[in-house]
Length: 339
Image 1 (tube, rainbow, N blue to C red):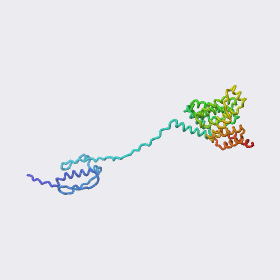
Image 2: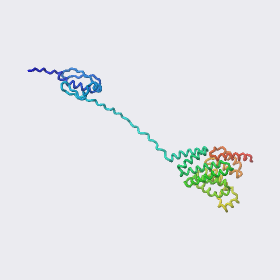
Image 3: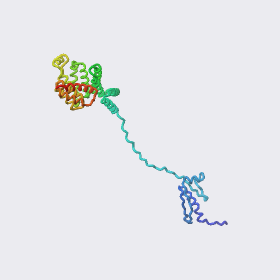
């Protein structure tokens, strides 16, 4: 009978130690550790390696499993690398401003045209106004501003250029009438229609003035009903009263008989209206100029001279102001020599 040697404590725990060593080696790191047997109290050194290092050192297929010499199978699992979770705070985009509306674009371009007019660059201003008119023919504002431009252009020419002046005034009347057709509630439309009719009549004589007198007065009254602070309307109405007051009684009788009733007008009303216009906008040369003409007609030469001198200090705002200043310089020299 074969005699069997008793298994020592070390031999009993050896398979377990092998399995533990393999498992520890798969847990990652290059740390060295010790596994202590509870039975033998012997220390078995164990080296811990990183997963990548360990796998590279194992034969192909060993990661699927390892069988010890004692028949024990140790499962070696590949370590799972979990991607780090990064907290990203997404800031909301700043709210983009809405695209400009067609009206905003129109207003922006109109400001450029107005700036060109204020700079007395009438060629550029006319081009900009007309380019806007192509896309917005229904805008009454464009029409009265073109009428204003054409009136100022015509008035800046000497009276000897009557044919050219009339052409500008005809264009002004055309656009002013269109502005009123488009918007009856536009005060400036009525103002510049009256202005266009007035300057046009000046070049055609007294009969044309009388024929258009009632229409001019009606347009100015409408303008002031819509906007009582329209200084241009007050100024033109003052000129209207001055012109009517200057018509002699014979002319008035003839006009009443053949041209219709001539509206009433007086120098007193004219003066009141010019002063009203100056109070509303003291920097407009025309207001002072027309008041000075009124005083000169009334032979109030000292007052006329004072008003002309004030007007000569005002800045140019329209091309027609250039001609007015030339006229006032000439009249100032003549009035200065009078007692």
